[in-house]
Length: 579
Ligand code: C2E
Ligand code: CA
Ligand code: CA
Image (cartoon, rainbow, N blue to C red; front, side):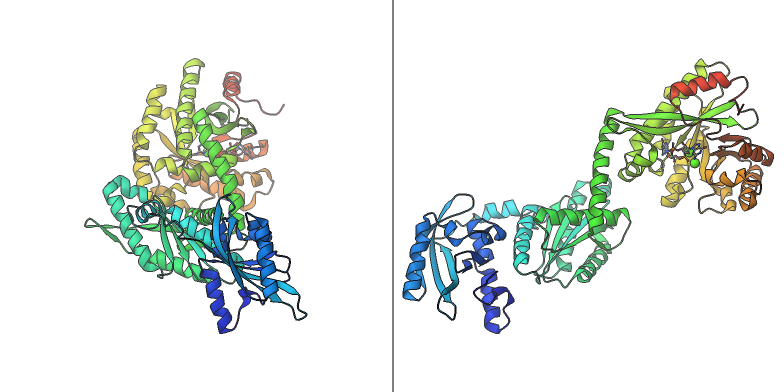
């Protein structure tokens, strides 16, 4: 770019610095062109006045802005003829097509050999700009509850800062997205009036935690946005985030009651690549989501890797929600057999998602998102009902199957619902089966979250005569002795132990399985081995005293119809072994 003047953006001396301030903050439009009228520099005033983006202006010729293109030619001739600045009135056309009467003054700059290197110009509208009605302005740009600027204001301001950042990349700013955690809980337990009061107090505290030149806005219900000016970099933003987290950590006095809040904070830093305010805001939200998911205190700076993750996650979440509404889930059943006789004693129900486009999806393709979003609760409750209905049908219909037992997996999310005990009761009553017909599987990780709440729910379940099975046993962190304290009746020995049970020298794996089985006997717990794939594994388990198992050796998880046929075919001699 053949800038005719030393770039305004690189001014170093005091005069240039002053010029820079005028250039950046003037409400008048200021521009510099090259000799042929192409814009080389335009200030934010110019951008505001004409409604073009800065880059759009830089792609144009000054002449293009005049309603009558001849006007610029006339002005330029006068300037060049008289060798000094000239001012005149002209009509300019904004990007939106509106015409604007303006004073335009300009001067030429010459090269040492006397030819015109370019023009400097100033544009100001004739007459007052329509002053926005104070009242309307306030109402549309402020949040009435907290008196903070609202989302619209915030986005407008962010848009301007991004524009300015384009010409002065050294001028960095940051955006903090602050989402209150569990605000809904306050609303639900203390009422909306308390919730509103809390938001006002949070707004006040946030405003006191930032510098006067920063902007705090209420973006949505329990979400706030903060613009931090003049930032050195990510570390400084993280420090501010830390200060905010700490500041919010002090209790709030809501009508005499101490209320504690915490926040998830996402950070984005100004980058010339940000095309719009919405993009930058969205990335900060994404980072806050990540911070929340990872249980991070303080703030998390946005990284590109979060974007792709959240987009696919979001898409899966949307599809999952639809799937719950349209009931696209099915259960497959894997037989649990008596190792000795190979007879089926029950089934484990395993969820599948019958996806309209992608076909049958396995749990690892949708359960993690279901867990995160809480959708596991409706899915899991449906699985519970459906599995109970199915086992009731088989017990009633198939001769000799009155004692078949159904096993259903539970998520900790279900256990944390205080009324989950009654969900189980309804499932049993709805199907008309006794509690012994159902087993519920949990993993020891359920005791990490809120042990008291989980135990409470487990006690309700035990009252219904429903037995609890500890899944994936041996993989967790629990010591074997700690088992004594858990309200469980069965252990499912994890399939990772099975591999070595096939080898002649079973080594420590064999010992481990043996220890688990001995311990289970001592504690009067039943043990079920899972993932049994070979006859050797079966023989070794039998020798060690294990009586029940499931695994591909007997059957993979299969559809209900096939499971029913398996029961019929194996009622005499069990599931056949290899010929
Ligand atoms: P899990 O409870 O440990 O289920 C056993 C998994 O091992 C099943 O995978 C089953 O197909 C597989 N399996 C069975 N026998 C063998 C074998 O001989 N060899 C090998 N290699 N694998 C075998 P699946 O169906 O993909 O389920 C994965 C996990 O998804 C389950 O692990 C369970 O934690 C979860 N899950 C499934 N359905 C539900 C549900 O309705 N609710 C909840 N909360 N979780 C579920
Ligand atoms: Ca299981
Ligand atoms: Ca398992």
